[in-house]
Length: 70
Image 1 (cartoon, rainbow, N blue to C red):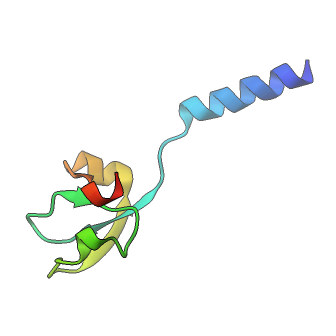
Image 2: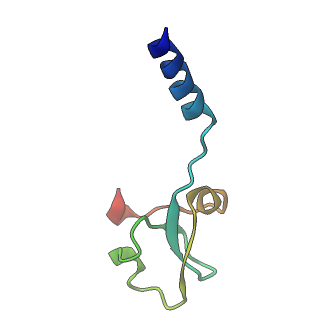
């Protein structure tokens, strides 16, 4: 019974948890990608400031994962 309770608790938390991962973007108006690594080579050409945001915000803003990190 204890094992069943733990499994139910685990799966309930998985369903309700949101993705709270920090990602990095170039803060330019034309930037379209997000990066998990602040040293990603895809950020190398950023002439604006590199900032960190939540991945959900990046996705909501229409950004997609950098091809170097797929």
